[in-house]
Image (cartoon, rainbow, N blue to C red):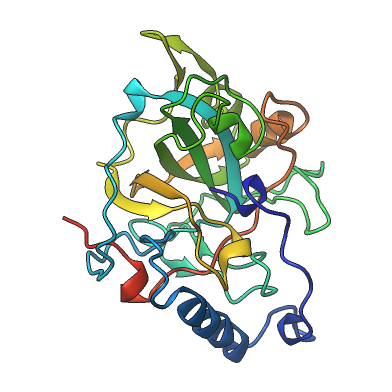
Length: 280
C-alpha cells in the first residue's frame, strides 16, 4: 500500500543520493535499515510490510484482529508499485538498491517472456518523473479494502470515513508482468469494480495465481524506509505472477476513478524479525 496514500514523499537526503550508476550503495540501504530499527525499538509498533512471503519467521507479537475476508469489506482503492514490494513465489529476482527513495528497487518476475511478448511498444506507458513502464517490467497491484462504509476513490483517505476513523484494512496483492500481447489480461478488466452482496468489490482479481499468503503487517511505500507505519493491515499476497497487456495498463493510467497515473515506489523489504509477524 503506497506511502503516497499516507504521507508526502520523503524529502531528499544527501546521504541517499544515487551514485553515478543510478543506484545507491549497500551502505545506504544498511543505514536506512538501522534507522528503521532505531526509530521503532521499544515504541510498540505493530508488524510491518512488505516481507518475504516464503519466510514465516517473525518476533513481533503486537496483536490486532485479522480483518474479515475482502468479500465482507468495501474496496476503497487500487494502485500499483513498479517492481514487487514483496519477495517470494515467482518474484524473487532483486531489482537492485535503486535510488534510495523506492524507485528501481523491489523484486522482479523470475520467469522469461517469449520473443513476441518482449517486443517494445512505441508509446510511453504511465510516464512520470521517475520514468515510464516498459515491456518486461513487474508491477505489484494493491486492491485495498476497508470495513468502513466507503466508496472507492483516490488515496487511503477513501478507506476512512467520518463515522469510522480506524477501520480494519486488508490488501489483496497481485503481481503482474507487462507483456506486448493483446491476448494477455486486460488491466482495465482487472481493476473493474462493482457492488456484490452490498459491498464494493474488485470483480476480476485473478483466481489462478496460487493460494494467497496471509499475514499481519502494515501499509508500505518508501516513506517508511526509516520509520514504522502506524497502520495495521491484513495482507493476502498471491505467489504466482500473471501476464498483463502493457497497452491496457497505459490506458488505465490515462484515466481511472483512483486518480492513479504512474507507478509508486517500493519500501525496502522488511527483514528485521522484531518488525515481522510470525506466520502460520
